[in-house]
Length: 95
Image (cartoon, rainbow, N blue to C red; front, side, top):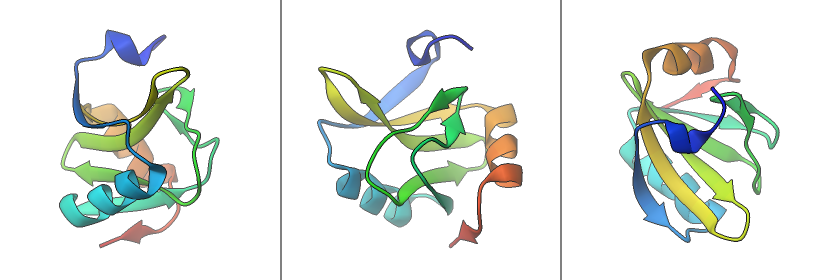
């Protein structure tokens, strides 16, 4: 995968803080994983203020994505392979 823009995604929050993204994921996703900056998702390193929460609902991955000059977005993408990869390599599951 070369670019997040090439995936079919849904934007949940625009111009959000990392805390707002974390709070949303923890409140709305059936499971979540707290990761550190640099954790790779869809082959891209996530940046942000730790802990960064990545949410999973079945095959749906919800995560903050920061685009320089545009700010931080909370995005949702359906991807079975990425959801399973996160389940296997991310530190301790929450919820």
